[in-house]
Length: 143
Image (cartoon, rainbow, N blue to C red):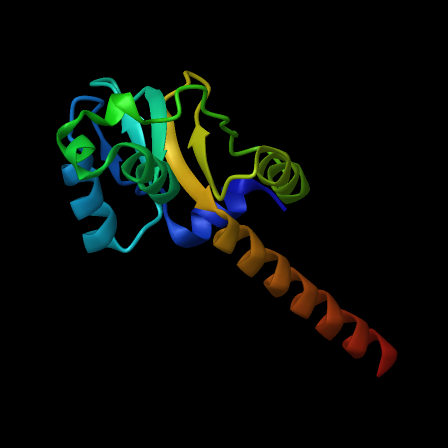
């Protein structure tokens, strides 16, 4: 059970923004796409940061709505934890739990963005695997 298996099933498309895009633009994208986080990339698709709904809510709470014209880079998390396709689901769960975040960008060998997984993707996969294992046990016991 690896990150690759999740991406093979859900796809590798990731919604991204540039560091210079405004928080207002980021909010519009988050709302339109019905997603919880955006990966901030440079022109060569290298991960520069991540911007979540929570990040935006926190800064608005502290500084008011005037920050909506500020650039994403002013709020984004710069030290982004990432994973690679070969990482296991238990390892990804550990990273998400320890870091207390719900979205994990996937990078390739050259550190370019190649996908994104969420806690929802991980939970869905774990449930599918548990159901498959239960069916296998049931089939074995009825032999």
